[in-house]
Length: 319
Length: 319
Image (tube, each protein chain N blue to C red):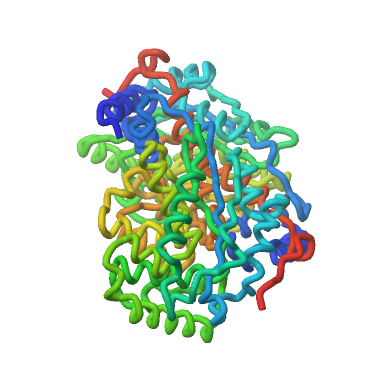
């Protein structure tokens, strides 16, 4: 971000007709957006949500409350406008695109083999990077993939440390038996790939998934183009955990939309150094939490851009 | 609220294409709105913010960082579109009205006399009640009044108990000397009116202010007409503290928009039994926190109304 532009935006905040600092995080968001956009009065008229969908070999072990065909069925639901993310992007005025990633070819079961070949993982990263649209002012990576909290938990454990148990949660709402299966699967995957996951790419390739790698690619591409990102939930944050473990500053252009109800999301946000804007007990994925939180960015930028200064409004300042 | 309509709305939530409960508080909000609107698929296209403004005799003792003429200057700023609430209502698509209440006649200093006569307090209550517009689907009471965190703290202490110190905070950002003056003023007001504040009206009349009484009147009128209310910050919640102390169910048609940075707001929300939607470190008043939070209601209702059911979308349910 441009430090001079950030300083100019902060100076403007100090002149607006309100007690200094009284808009709290809305002020921080305005300065953050200004810095990345390189303009002291940024806008976010153009917000793009892209939902990446992928299937997971490990889902065959029964780690979700839903059958694996639901990934493709939900992609059709997105395309017909019937999912939560359709309604939520409509409400916030964001555009929505859906990118299914080889749904007929699930990744390999991470407890038995690397999820993807190098070529497959690179392809997913590139498709994610290519999905950030021209002119986008705030990008939201979303995801759909039955079973994907399991590879996400494995990624967190491999990248950030800690026991499998600390990163595995109930996802869509699984019972104790499935939860135990998820934990065992993550433990097996960590045992299999542990020493081979020597860098972020290898960790992502071995323990991730196509939609997860695509989200990581999109976050990297957005950073290259100075486009701020609104992260969604556990999967989206887990997607950048391997990168963040090597280079914590990867999150500098990211806002955390919410702390989801998924057990480990709070721990993951802490590890990434991100303070979520919302905590509404959501745990749906698709980019749904981010599509609610982008409205806070809109509010922040409206106040920053439209308010009068003390001088303009002839209002007396603090004594 | 209508229990049958609430049940119908909850049944619809269970059929939408998402894991049960995965939209968290968005689901609760949809059911809440359905119950008060008396329709299983409610909308909130029409949101009204009304900012009540009043002046306070106690402000002459220097309990704010800003001079008292700022109340009228900010009313002019609202009318010219330059304040935070103008920008924030623009961002969320809510209407905005401003009602200055006898700004040239401040209330009496609460540490020396009742703030208002019975006629004055009734007038303020009635003007508040009359300000809830026809056709409003979600009402936001906002306020402006230099010095008004001081009477708000006195109202909380009188209605809910506890020491003055526990309810007094830094408001617009006062220093330690002013903070000590606020505490002493509230203690003097409690000593003067303590035994005479025998009911909610007397507490409000003796320790409140015109904009505070108007907010209480608006919340009562909204309840009578089954219009849900989005409360803003410390002042708006303090306005209903005397009513809530007598009849806790007064908050049943209210949502708490945010927990502000004002020290005692969290304690006040707890006492009212309200769980705030946001915690963005805001402390501006004017209805600003509520104008951000109403967007969460819009998101909740969009998901509730626009999503497809599992049957409509031919998506398999949980196994």
